[in-house]
Length: 286
Image 1 (cartoon, one colour):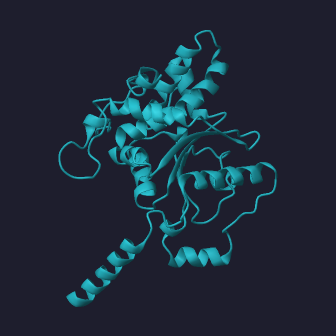
Image 2 (cartoon, one colour; image 1 turned 180 degrees about the horizontal axis):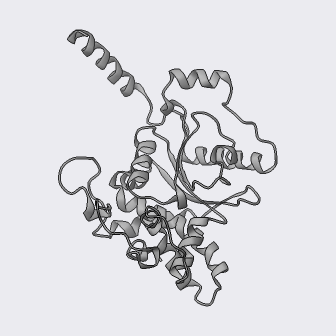
Image 3 (cartoon, one colour; image 1 turned 90 degrees about the vertical axis):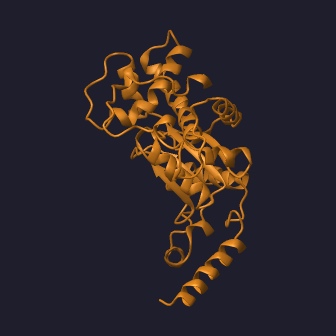
């Protein structure tokens, strides 16, 4: 391709980007949240509309940018009982979803969230925990001292959950294990918010500037209902992370200051069982 043609194409792309609104959906974060709430109400009442699942939407997906349509980024558990698009009654190009066991936020998840917020330009980010979470149950058992042996890649996956379990136990010292788990599931939602803010200077900045709204929620696998957690808790966590000297300060890739000093797991690092995991994560937002 000739240089002149390349310059013309690049120039046209830049003009198109410059002309695009910050959030191509034209929805505010609160409006996006309302859409999720209304979608969940339809799902629970058996009145799901299954929007944006027809051939016309597929044609759009094949020719248009998802950033022109997606209005929310969601991280949820991989659990088969948590069908995110269905429980919010959303369709193709409506929600940018990250799924991982225990809805934890490590490097891969944080990067995916950054992409959803900074490149897909969704104005809303939701951490969606759920009742009966097997990952939280397993970590609770391990912290209590009777966990079972885990496959080699699972401990470094779920060690993010251990601080949440520890806080739940500390807040409910006389509670039985079965009663600790529900509290730990909620704490784990906040742990994921904390871990994201610790890892992502970009998301912190977007949240502080009002460009993105971060909320926590809990899905009941037995009723289908989403409970929306207190929004002021997110502000509290953000303020605490801003005082933490170990928070990631670099927003963009490249240069110094990026890497294991801010919580990345190094290649070859020995990972301990959840009950021995580092409890520094999130202790300050107890």
